[in-house]
Amino acid sequence: MNSNNWFRSAAGLFLTLVLTLSCPALAAQKDSKKDAKEETPQGTPVLWKEPADIASRDLFLGPGGEQMKPDLSQVVWESDEEGGYSVKWNVRDGSGKKWVAKLGHEAQPETVAVRLVWAAGYMTEVNYLVPCVHIVNAPKPRKDVERCEGNGFANVRFKSRPKGMKKLDNWSWNDNPFKGTKEFEGLVVMMALLNNWDLKDSNNKIFYMPAGDGEQGELQYVVSDLGATFGKTGGAITHDRNDPQKYIRSGFVEKVEGDRVKFDYHGKDSSLFDNISVEQAKWIGDLLSQLSEQQIKDAFRAGNFKPQEIEGLTYEVRARINELHSLNAPSPAPTPAGTGQGF
Image (cartoon, rainbow, N blue to C red):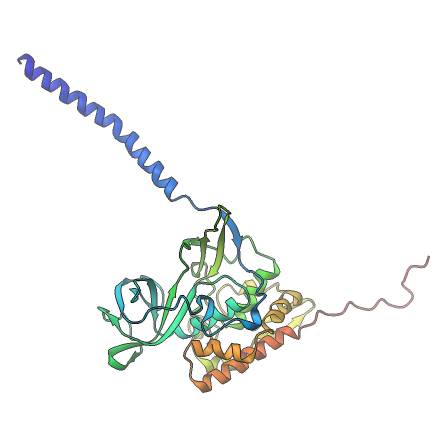
């Protein structure tokens, strides 16, 4: 081998050795940057904020108000949203804003449930129900859904989040920072009021909401899927959703035993209802009692329920609120005569 060939071979071996040794370091550096980028944001855990304006909240437009409504001048299909009972699509509206569109049986009750939960001060996402919408390039849905004029889709729920809000992870009904507080137990009671039988952790999301001026943001704990509501609670065969008649005929407060309220709830994670005090149940009832009949009707109007259904559902929701509001803690047993201590 001449000197030139030997030099080229040695140089090749040296380069191979350098690349071999440096690749793990480069990969580690890349992973380190990735981990730093994906590090969970730190923030204050928030489940509920006092709704000082509850009596004036607009339950027709809901938490997004007028300013966040979708631009329906053109809605374009982009992709499927996998998983769940309902057909869900990622779509883009006329302004370019992205939404998750839910089609089918859960869209109407979820729209209403979000408004009632938001009215009580709990963290929610933003949603609107569109009675009839045409979606450009939409594929055939994976299951039958209601259609409307011009080959449009009927009763479609559009869901989005405020700008800057980031989805993180799920949270658990049985392991969270609020367990045992009146605010958490009040949320559980609200699930009974709505007949939400689908209390599984995968329906609960934590969202990071940044704060301005360098302040710490919030970790907002949200029940993100409220579609299994306004029907009948029960097991896999007996439960139902979006059935006003079954909702109206179902029970709510079963009885009061000592200082505990027993609810007529039959659904997932029913043990959550085993230890709710009269004080906790009455607290959420007192809050909701500030809603007017018109506000409750507006929530059902937002869900595009029929006028007769709105009347019946509003009456039932008001009756359930009144049951909570009128709860009273049992009076302590009187002290038998002659047992008091003398001084």
